[in-house]
Image 1 (spheres, rainbow, N blue to C red):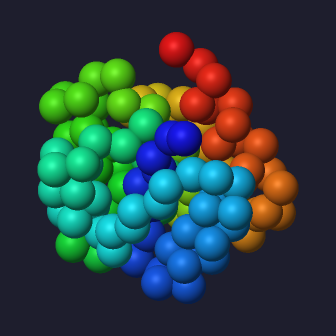
Image 2 (cartoon, one colour; image 1 turned 45 degrees about the horizontal axis):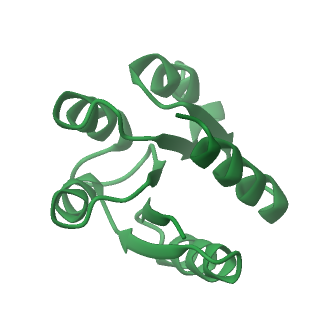
Length: 123
């Protein structure tokens, strides 16, 4: 089964996604910021990265750019709960920078599992 890397500074979000996606049969790794996420992906490439946009140390948009430069074919789902507070639509920007899919927090668990399946089926 596929391996998924969840990158989010919220430990509860990481734990919840790990539990839900492991119940679906995936192997799930997690990182608390973009620096850890890129380091983790380099050492154990995942089939898909689920990435929060608003994080300390290395935020999601910068992480998407770095991942795209180093791993152009990596599959990315970007998510954010803060897009509505920003003047820019951060999720739209994430898509323009290379995320295949975007997701507003909070989301239904069925939505994320459906999106993961969809992303993993694409070549």
